[in-house]
Image (cartoon, rainbow, N blue to C red):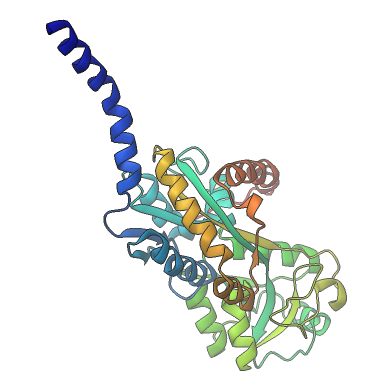
Length: 327
C-alpha cells in the first residue's frame, strides 16, 4: 500500500509542471494588458496600435490599454518593455525604427533582437513627402528646387534624432541634393501639429499621420515613396511619377513581449492579433490610413522573428557605414 502511495505521489509531482502550464495557458489573461507605444499620441504607431488593441480586447476578454511612453526615438518605452516581467501583461508595439535602426545608432541597454519575444508582424506602408500648406510649390520637382534655393533655411520635423523619419529625411537629402534642418520631436503627432501650423516646412511621414491632414487640405502631399500609389490618396503620384525615381522609403510595425514570455502566452497574443488583422472593419481602417497588412503566413511569431533578423542584417551595415549616431 505504501509503495502504491509513493508511486501515486511521484506521478502527481511529475505532472504538476504540465498541469501548471495548462492552467496558465487557460487562465491568461486575467487582468488588463498594457501595450506600450514608444512615441507620442497621434503618430502612425499610436493610431495603428489603438486599432489593433481595440479588437484584441474582444478576443482576449481583457482590456488592452495603449500607453504612450515617448522619448529618445522610442528607446525609453522600448527599454521599459525589455525590463518588464515576461508574463504577457506588458507588450511593445514597435516598428522598423525602434527595433532595427535604433540598435545600430544608439548604445542601448537592451538588445533589439534577443531581448524580445516576437508576437506578430502587423503592417507596412510607404511614406509621404508632405509640406506646409503655404509652401511655394505644387509638385515634387518644384518643391526640390525651392529647397535648393534655400539651403539650410528650411526645416523637417522628425520623431527624434535617428528615428525612422530622420533616416528617411537623410535619404531624401541624399537623393535630391538638398540641405535643410532637422527638428526633433517626441513623436510624429507633435511634428505634424507644427507642420499644420506652419512652424516647420516639411516631413517625410507615414500615411497614418498625413492622410487625414492631406484630405483636410491643411498640408500638401507631393509624392508617395513607393512604386505604387496609395489607395487612400489615389491622386498623389509616386516618386517615380513625380520625377525622383527610386526614392523608396517604407516601414513596418510589429508586436513583441519581453524575453522569456512563455510560448503559450505569445501564441494566444498572436492568435488575437491575427484575428484583429482578419477583421474587415480593422482592415478597412488600416487601409484608410495607407497601411498594407501582411498576408497570414507572414503574421506568425516565427515569421516575425525571421523577418526581424533579416532587416537587421540588411540595414545595420548601411547605417553604420553612414556613421549615424543617435543623440
